[in-house]
Each structure stands twice: as C-alpha cells, then as structure tokens.
Length: 225
Image 1: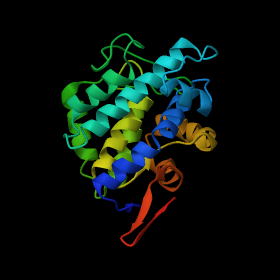
Image 2: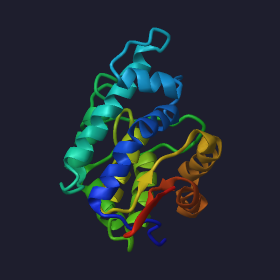
Image 3: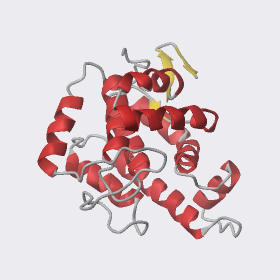
Image 4: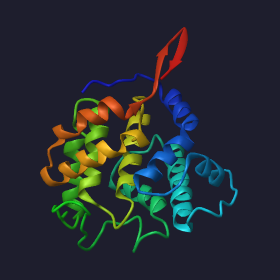
C-alpha cells in the first residue's frame, strides 16, 4: 500500500491536535462508550456531565492522556515497552492491570478465536516482522490489526492498537488512523472475520480507503481533507 499523505512531522502533529477531540470520540465509540461528540468535548473541557457513566468518562480522560503521551514522545522508538506505556494510559483504573502484558486467557465476543497468552519474545519477533513492511501506512494498518487480534493486554486493546498505529503514522508524516462512527458496523463485521481467519486482505483495504485521513500539502497552499 502506498502512503496516502506526505507531511512533515510538525504538519502531522498539527493535524492530530486539530482533530484530537474527534479522534478521542471515535475511539470511545469504538469501545462501545455511550457518549455524544458534544459530551466528549465537554468532558475534555473539564466540565462534569452527569448523564455520562463514570466508566465512560474515565475512558475519555484516559484517551486524552494517551494522546498527550504519544504527541509528547513522537520521536521515541515504537517498541514493546513504548506500547505498554500507551496501554498504561489507556487502561488506567479500568482493568486487572495496565501497562503490562496479559498473563491469562481471554475470550472475544462474537468469535471462536481465542488469542494466546502473549509471551514477550514472541511479541517482539512478530512486531519486527510487521515493522519491516515497505510503507508507513501498510505498517500502521497491519500493526493496528495485529494489536487488536493479539489482545496483548487485559483491556483497551483496540484503543491501544489505534494509538500505536497513529504513533507510527504521525512520526513519519503519513496521516491519522480513525474509525469514524459511520464505518463502525462494517469495520466490526470485517474485524470479527479477521479474528477468525487472520486474513488481513479482508480488512486492510477497507481501513486504507476509509480510515486513513490527513492533510494534502502543496507548498504554496494547504488543502485539508
């Protein structure tokens, strides 16, 4: 897959910051949080929203902190220790433990697939293979899907996978990965099939066409899309 966008790191960070509330909202909806965009904006502005569950508020604030972390450390290596730190922000106070690899079995609703308990040496080797893909966009999409399917952590795996893919994309100026609400149904259907088959071709083009955004930069003018 060719890269869709060619920005500087500074330009990509600018786009990420402009779309921060939107990206947090979409990630929260991806995890099933029952919030609206205005409610998300209000929570991020530091105002209490009594109609939103405390757990959903925690998810939104954790996503804010995780995004701040990756934008503040965009030049750091994307390795397993870094990914654990992302999960430490994402799943804080939400799971059995956070920021460390899962040590027991989990099940994924809607599929017969049961992910292995992650072993550090195996995870590192698999990551090395994914990060050898030829373009940043192909690496980010495969890393995202692998992160979802591997279930490396007790909780927050889709959120963590989204953020680690975005860390990779932003660090190379290649855009933002965000699954918008209008694409959620088809994404979830394709993701369930991916869990069962481990067939990336069933879903990677869908993500490429529908879920990678950014800014087309012409050096005499800039056009957002």
